[in-house]
Amino acid sequence: MKPAYRVALVAFPGIRAFDVSVITEVWGTDRTDRGAPAFDLRRVATDSAAVPMRGGLALAPDRTLTWLSRADLILVPGLDDHVTPAPAPVLDALRRAHARGTTLAALCGGAFTLAQAGLLDGRRAITHWGLIDLLRTHHPRVNVVPDALFIEDDNIWTAAGTAAGIDLCLHLVRRSHGAEAAATIARSMVTAPFRTGTQAQFIEHPTPRADRDADTLAAIRDHALRHLHEPLTVAALAARAGMSPRSFARHFTAETGATPLRWLLDQRIAAAQKLLERTDLPMPEVARRAGFGSEVTMRQHFASRLATSPRAYRTAFSTRSATGSGAGGSNPIAR
Image 1: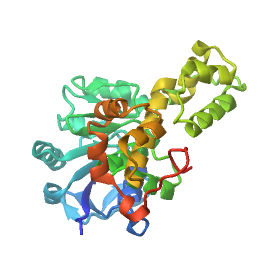
Image 2 (image 1 turned 30 degrees about the horizontal axis):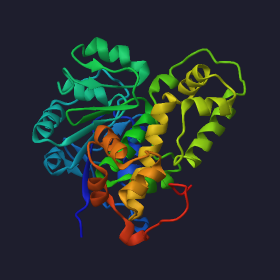
Image 3 (image 1 turned 120 degrees about the vertical axis):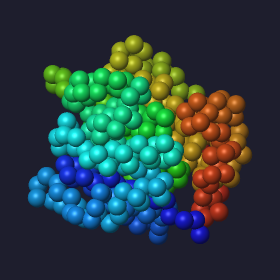
């Protein structure tokens, strides 16, 4: 039996209860009966004393910082006060973990903790849009990227505001265990397996007047998902929405945070991932059903977006021995 994936939640006074809850929900809930991987989540702190959080809550650690040397993934929750220094032993332990090659991930304002450790100096990072200026002011050596939901640099992941922490956690599951594992957890949490776009769509703007665009574009996206295997173009989708291509692209990007072409590519990659995991269809058929047109094109996009090949992805994440071939029908994913 494959050993459980070891995850460490780094706890110290001032961490946000919401981020702790997200981490616990994703990695601390046993879903192996639904086919999800086994996780071993540990709450790691400098000692065994309860860690106070806002609202009268407290977190009971079950491991000390020495356990970080065993972790496959280390997660840093966001903070209530982003400029209060984290404990020196925590910062030292994070530096050692990164030097060992352990994956580090910070949710929301947890980027400030990684920055205090010097781990974001010269690296790209993101935090909540309302904290971007604060992060730049206190840590000017960090290359703050303002318009991402989450980002990675040198095996260090950071996420934007509150809900983007969920996005990052599910992405890290997908990255290590495959799209089906992430989808299983997302279904349990009643959330989307992944969102595309940037946090620019969530930054405060004057409220626009309500019009038909939102409903129209939702219908267009639904149509696209049901016809991924067809050659979809922005011009054709715009015509279906009754807009010019330029107006359609502008409204689409404003609503989703991604251009129509980027959104379509994300959906096609996700569809191909599911087919590779669930079926034993030959590569050309996977490429056709996901809308790539050819195996070569699919392989190129997998290399650029997932840093792997479709064949290597299938080898790592296939579940077809448990689910059957799943072939049949033209719709590439079960909806």
